[in-house]
Image (cartoon, rainbow, N blue to C red):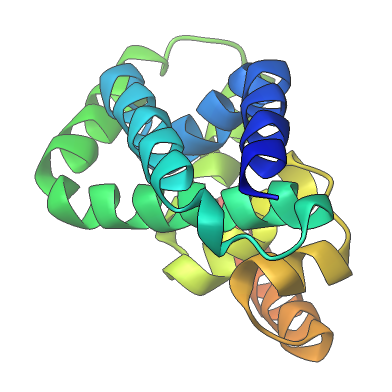
Amino acid sequence: MSHVAREILIEYIKENQNKLYKIAYTYTKNQDLALDIVQEAVTKALENIHKLKQEEFVKTWFYRILINEALQTVKKNKKIIEYELVENETSTQNNEDNLVESIDIYNQIEKLNDKLKTVIILRFFENLKIEEIAVITKTNTNTVKSRLYKGLNEIKKDYERRKV
Protein backbone atom coordinates (compact mmCIF):
# COMPACT_ATOMS: atom_id res chain seq x y z
CA MET A 1 0.00 0.00 0.00
CA SER A 2 2.74 2.45 0.94
CA HIS A 3 4.32 2.45 -2.52
CA VAL A 4 0.96 2.93 -4.24
CA ALA A 5 -0.03 5.67 -1.78
CA ARG A 6 3.30 7.39 -2.39
CA GLU A 7 2.68 7.40 -6.15
CA ILE A 8 -0.85 8.75 -5.67
CA LEU A 9 0.48 11.49 -3.40
CA ILE A 10 3.21 12.49 -5.86
CA GLU A 11 0.69 12.60 -8.71
CA TYR A 12 -1.72 14.69 -6.62
CA ILE A 13 1.04 17.18 -5.74
CA LYS A 14 2.18 17.45 -9.37
CA GLU A 15 -1.37 18.07 -10.62
CA ASN A 16 -2.20 20.61 -7.89
CA GLN A 17 1.06 22.44 -7.24
CA ASN A 18 -0.33 25.86 -8.19
CA LYS A 19 -3.41 25.36 -6.02
CA LEU A 20 -1.26 24.24 -3.09
CA TYR A 21 0.98 27.29 -3.50
CA LYS A 22 -2.08 29.58 -3.56
CA ILE A 23 -3.34 28.12 -0.30
CA ALA A 24 0.03 28.69 1.36
CA TYR A 25 0.24 32.19 -0.10
CA THR A 26 -3.23 32.96 1.26
CA TYR A 27 -1.83 32.50 4.76
CA THR A 28 1.45 34.40 4.30
CA LYS A 29 1.18 36.88 1.39
CA ASN A 30 4.86 36.09 0.85
CA GLN A 31 6.10 34.11 -2.15
CA ASP A 32 9.18 32.68 -0.45
CA LEU A 33 7.34 31.65 2.69
CA ALA A 34 4.54 30.10 0.62
CA LEU A 35 7.05 28.06 -1.38
CA ASP A 36 8.74 26.98 1.86
CA ILE A 37 5.39 25.89 3.28
CA VAL A 38 4.58 23.75 0.25
CA GLN A 39 8.07 22.25 0.20
CA GLU A 40 7.93 21.43 3.91
CA ALA A 41 4.42 19.98 3.58
CA VAL A 42 5.52 17.77 0.69
CA THR A 43 8.55 16.58 2.68
CA LYS A 44 6.43 15.79 5.74
CA ALA A 45 3.80 14.02 3.64
CA LEU A 46 6.38 11.84 1.91
CA GLU A 47 8.05 11.01 5.24
CA ASN A 48 4.70 10.09 6.79
CA ILE A 49 2.95 8.44 3.83
CA HIS A 50 2.86 5.19 5.81
CA LYS A 51 0.36 6.86 8.17
CA LEU A 52 -2.19 7.34 5.38
CA LYS A 53 -4.67 4.53 5.96
CA GLN A 54 -6.78 4.90 2.80
CA GLU A 55 -5.49 6.16 -0.54
CA GLU A 56 -8.74 7.93 -1.42
CA PHE A 57 -8.13 10.38 1.44
CA VAL A 58 -4.79 11.62 0.08
CA LYS A 59 -6.27 15.04 -0.77
CA THR A 60 -7.75 15.79 2.65
CA TRP A 61 -4.74 14.23 4.41
CA PHE A 62 -2.32 16.46 2.47
CA TYR A 63 -4.49 19.57 2.97
CA ARG A 64 -4.29 18.99 6.71
CA ILE A 65 -0.48 18.80 6.54
CA LEU A 66 -0.29 21.91 4.33
CA ILE A 67 -2.58 23.98 6.54
CA ASN A 68 -0.78 22.93 9.73
CA GLU A 69 2.53 23.89 8.14
CA ALA A 70 1.07 27.25 7.02
CA LEU A 71 -0.23 28.02 10.50
CA GLN A 72 3.12 27.12 12.09
CA THR A 73 4.98 29.29 9.58
CA VAL A 74 2.65 32.23 10.19
CA LYS A 75 3.24 31.98 13.93
CA LYS A 76 7.03 31.82 13.46
CA ASN A 77 7.12 34.69 10.95
CA LYS A 78 4.38 36.98 12.24
CA LYS A 79 6.51 40.18 12.10
CA ILE A 80 7.64 39.59 8.49
CA ILE A 81 4.08 38.88 7.34
CA GLU A 82 2.59 41.89 9.13
CA TYR A 83 5.23 44.19 7.62
CA GLU A 84 4.59 42.88 4.10
CA LEU A 85 0.83 43.26 4.50
CA VAL A 86 1.27 46.93 5.42
CA GLU A 87 3.63 47.42 2.47
CA ASN A 88 1.17 45.76 0.07
CA GLU A 89 -1.75 47.85 1.32
CA THR A 90 0.21 51.08 0.89
CA SER A 91 1.33 50.25 -2.64
CA THR A 92 -2.21 49.38 -3.81
CA GLN A 93 -4.00 52.45 -2.48
CA ASN A 94 -3.94 54.15 -5.88
CA ASN A 95 -5.70 51.28 -7.70
CA GLU A 96 -9.35 51.06 -8.69
CA ASP A 97 -12.09 50.95 -6.04
CA ASN A 98 -13.07 47.32 -6.63
CA LEU A 99 -9.47 46.17 -6.14
CA VAL A 100 -9.26 48.13 -2.91
CA GLU A 101 -12.57 46.60 -1.82
CA SER A 102 -11.25 43.10 -2.58
CA ILE A 103 -8.15 43.81 -0.56
CA ASP A 104 -10.38 45.09 2.25
CA ILE A 105 -12.32 41.84 2.40
CA TYR A 106 -9.10 39.86 2.13
CA ASN A 107 -7.61 41.82 5.04
CA GLN A 108 -10.75 41.13 7.05
CA ILE A 109 -10.23 37.40 6.47
CA GLU A 110 -6.67 37.86 7.71
CA LYS A 111 -7.99 39.22 11.02
CA LEU A 112 -9.99 36.08 11.75
CA ASN A 113 -8.61 33.53 14.18
CA ASP A 114 -6.89 30.54 12.56
CA LYS A 115 -9.85 28.17 12.86
CA LEU A 116 -12.29 30.59 11.22
CA LYS A 117 -9.78 31.65 8.56
CA THR A 118 -9.04 28.04 7.61
CA VAL A 119 -12.73 27.21 7.13
CA ILE A 120 -13.33 30.37 5.04
CA ILE A 121 -10.27 29.71 2.85
CA LEU A 122 -11.11 26.06 2.25
CA ARG A 123 -14.77 26.77 1.52
CA PHE A 124 -14.54 29.86 -0.67
CA PHE A 125 -11.03 29.82 -2.10
CA GLU A 126 -10.77 26.04 -2.60
CA ASN A 127 -14.49 25.27 -3.06
CA LEU A 128 -14.30 22.31 -0.72
CA LYS A 129 -17.47 20.76 0.68
CA ILE A 130 -18.36 21.07 4.35
CA GLU A 131 -17.68 17.34 4.79
CA GLU A 132 -14.19 17.63 3.28
CA ILE A 133 -13.38 20.59 5.51
CA ALA A 134 -14.54 18.58 8.54
CA VAL A 135 -12.09 15.80 7.66
CA ILE A 136 -9.22 18.23 7.05
CA THR A 137 -9.80 20.14 10.29
CA LYS A 138 -10.65 17.00 12.29
CA THR A 139 -13.99 18.45 13.41
CA ASN A 140 -17.60 17.53 12.77
CA THR A 141 -19.70 19.16 10.06
CA ASN A 142 -21.73 21.20 12.56
CA THR A 143 -18.52 22.76 13.91
CA VAL A 144 -17.44 23.62 10.36
CA LYS A 145 -20.82 25.20 9.65
CA SER A 146 -20.67 27.14 12.90
CA ARG A 147 -17.16 28.43 12.15
CA LEU A 148 -18.15 29.32 8.61
CA TYR A 149 -21.19 31.26 9.86
CA LYS A 150 -19.20 33.00 12.60
CA GLY A 151 -16.34 33.89 10.22
CA LEU A 152 -18.70 35.31 7.62
CA ASN A 153 -20.53 37.32 10.28
CA GLU A 154 -17.27 38.79 11.58
CA ILE A 155 -16.22 39.73 8.04
CA LYS A 156 -19.63 41.27 7.35
CA LYS A 157 -19.67 43.30 10.58
CA ASP A 158 -16.13 44.57 10.04
CA TYR A 159 -16.91 45.40 6.41
CA GLU A 160 -20.05 47.32 7.37
CA ARG A 161 -18.18 49.25 10.06
CA ARG A 162 -15.54 50.30 7.55
CA LYS A 163 -18.14 51.38 4.97
CA VAL A 164 -19.84 53.82 7.34
